[in-house]
Length: 117
Image (cartoon, rainbow, N blue to C red; front, side, top):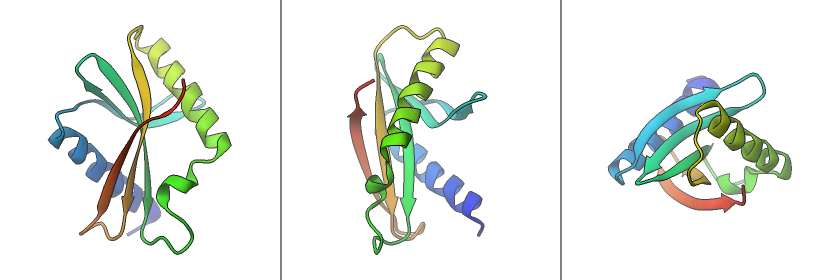
């Protein structure tokens, strides 16, 4: 399986997790010229901009540790771009979903509101 296929599989696991928790998926792999958002979901009136991080093992660190300062800034800009492109003036937050372990038996963790937008 290529790295792109592994990434898409991890994103599918995250989307399935969100749906099972009552979220509605608005968009997947939303992008514009400068940025990309893995998943945009809604729970009630709250929009969740979701970054998905996958690591097969934690020998080099946990998946959440791979959100760098630069990636954080890009996520904040991407959230603002999505809101502008979709005329969304309501509440939103930026979440991270980590998928660790094998894709067949993943450990999934939802870290909510991890960045101040």
